[in-house]
Amino acid sequence: MVLGSAAAILIAGWLIGATGIGGVLVVPMLNQVQGVALQDAIAAASLAFALPGVAAAWKLRQSGGAVPRGTGTMALASLPGAAIGAVLVHHVSVSWLLAGLAVLALASGLWGLRGAPHAREDREALSPLAMGALGAAVGLGSALTGTGGPVLLVPLLLLAGQPVRNILPPAQAIQLPVALCAATGHAIAGALDLRLALAIGGVLLLGALAGQWAAPRTPARALHHLVCVLLILTGAWYAWRLLA
Image 1 (tube, rainbow, N blue to C red):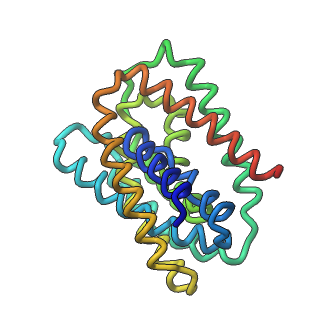
Image 2: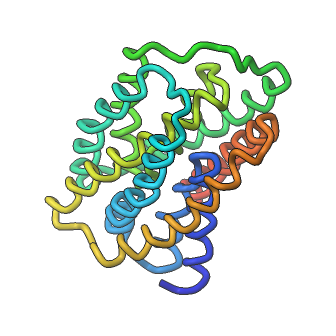
């Protein structure tokens, strides 16, 4: 792993730890800088996200804070979606999905910035049924794109009107099950480079721990704006990849 790639992946890990978003940087960096084939980059990234996922799960367990209802249902529902996505990615083009991700990220980021001054922090979490449906969809989309889960889940929850406090715990919780299940599917397909995945995962973990430390020390309003700006940048990145 070249130094520039390692630095970018470290930044991606920080963003994952602080906001749940950041995984979008990993696959393009591996594919365009390291020269790793797209499907192989997706497979390696899928397993790499397991390490920051473990850190996120540990943080949730240790914090003892309130976790929105349906978070467990969402995590379980992501498993079959991730397994299916890990199989499909080796047989279908993901161009249309990337286009959908670009539109979703841009729209939710712009909508979030528009509504940020009036965000309702007391709004209730979504129902377990709705969270389960989101989990299945996010598992499928994440495995197809190698983005780790939060990149899809955060904009969907933001569009649903959820405040940041109801977004970050589910975004952290979904990383580990999606990563492990998607990586299993890629391994069965014979497309998983274990050494590369663990090297990426180690760098992501270091960044994620730093991001976790920074998140609670950032004002809620600033964190909300940061998430929205990152979503807009994510959407622009996907759009650029499609047009390049």
